[in-house]
Image 1: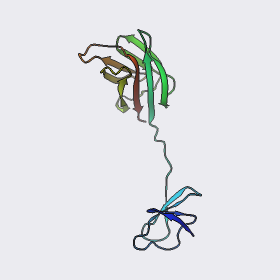
Image 2: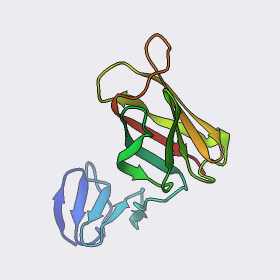
Image 3: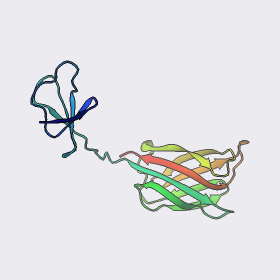
Length: 161
């Protein structure tokens, strides 16, 4: 065993075969295997799982753009675990995203980011699940009147399993 470097975490090529003393690090990382270990009061060192598990939560983060009275268009999607939504503008300041079965449970849909408008004008909004297949975004001016998006907006939400 050789300690290659220590900065609170030992960087090692093999696990230490002795118990840490005084102020010695109690974590060890082996860069060859990408495994992290902890000393928990006695030998042997215990491997710490660094595996990321998928809990089934679905995320969506994207930009929607709209001009005149056209339907909005997804201009850039950074995260989309759902699939392709059909975007629509049924009336001024009202936008829907539809995908069959995307939102099965009312109590498990959560907006995750504020909607901001690229024009810089203040925008109030309501983003909610309206059915198992659809969410609705409504946008308002400061006086509460319905307004269309000017430019593009950032939108995000998640659906828990």
